[in-house]
Length: 463
Image (cartoon, rainbow, N blue to C red; front, side, top):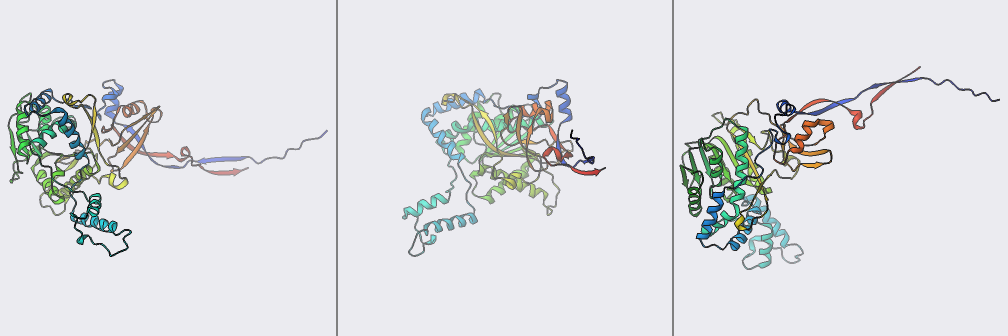
């Protein structure tokens, strides 16, 4: 019989020392959490939702536009085709090149012309672009030939058919956000730079019909002013005390409660002209300055240019008189736009609209736009500064992905789940869309590194 001998094994005791780091915890706003828990509001109506999603174009405006086109004996099929071309042109538009940009472009053209050229070196200064077809085509590929739009009678009618509904929807989304978030604001005066056919005025008169008393419009095109006056007369309810001018007023006074420039900066001849106009608009502002452009890369750059200029101007240490400003929307902060610092994705938003039915509109379409709302005041101490959703929300099985701009000036992607963030936070995120705000804030808390695959440090004691 074999006797099994077992040696004595030393006993080892492992004492775990947890490793921690700092990780921000997502917390739902207390007031919102209480409302949801008490069933006073639904998740799809949380206070960060921007309404309306699809603004309804006024019936009186649609009817009057149709009447005007009939009176002018405009073929609806042809005007519809022209409207599509105009929309495409506006969406693909670039601002005029500055002098330093032009020189850099010409150097590229010269380099391109000298590629595979084994003869004498070609200089741009010696080229007659009118006669040299090859050189002219290369020039067109590298240099955008900016020209201001000549808004004659036919172009104004085309613009009315092409952009009235889209512009109305964009203005409605922005002005309704001010109405929703600043409930005590009762504007009495409204200044519209590049007013066009007057869509901004229509929206403002609907939202603040009980307080607005005066509208001042600056529109260079005489034909556009005639259309705007005709449409304003048909408005329901009537819009009173509208004043039209073709040129910007010389005097700084009076100031206006709301100053708005929508889709107008591309018409100005250069950066200096744009900044001069922005400064004039700021000096005309009593409460809110609103800048809106197409939701393209170039449109976003112009909006951000205006945003940065006003922030630098107000906060300049060389200013004698003290002024205050903060970004009311869309940014929850007054810092540099994180888009330029982190990626090349533009900051834009979308709004749904229904095209004019008599022009063949059958389904809802999307209008992209970039904007900024600056308020001439200190940022309130009780301002929530909730994160803004800056890209389409990705809804997946049992989780939802939100890309947000935070109050600290950073971009953050958060994956919300019911297990990790709680039912209310998850359902609020799932009910939100691109352009909404999420009623939450981040709180720093210790994070166990072991949960992220980093082993705990241990000590071993041998007995």
